[in-house]
Length: 221
Image (cartoon, rainbow, N blue to C red; front, side, top):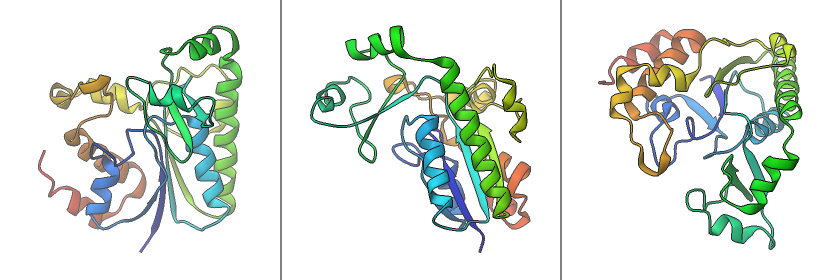
């Protein structure tokens, strides 16, 4: 059986809400999932690259999230910020996935004075190119999919092999399935009905497994 490595933000993370990863697992695929709730592209890509230095996979699916997200390594000085956050009061592998909110004074100052959008984008692209090279060297099939509109400004993104016209959130909001979206706690994760369609999309455009397609067609939408 083919081994699949995945990572992404809440769109992929099979936590409180079912995602396309759950759908694939129900279909019997062998998946190692490194996604996390509200995590940034830094963690998404770092985890994939680190794992590929340890183990071999047949396929890698990288779901990119939005820019400006901030993952904060927790310590005694900042733990209270996480605990008192109105929405993202949870940790992930020792980090606080605080996303891009400006709820705290410390984060307001960060985005006002310290955040560097050019470096943020460049860091993501360089990590993508490194991931792409690792997969090429190990003959691992790689699929990169955008969760949110990235509005790329750096032309180096053209060296990354991915469908730059497909964005999960944009496609979701343009579909009829968005009418059933759950807005609880400012949720942006697509509902289970769209996640089934997303699983079909990924198989149709990347995995291309006929047996998987037959199983996916059995899901009722």
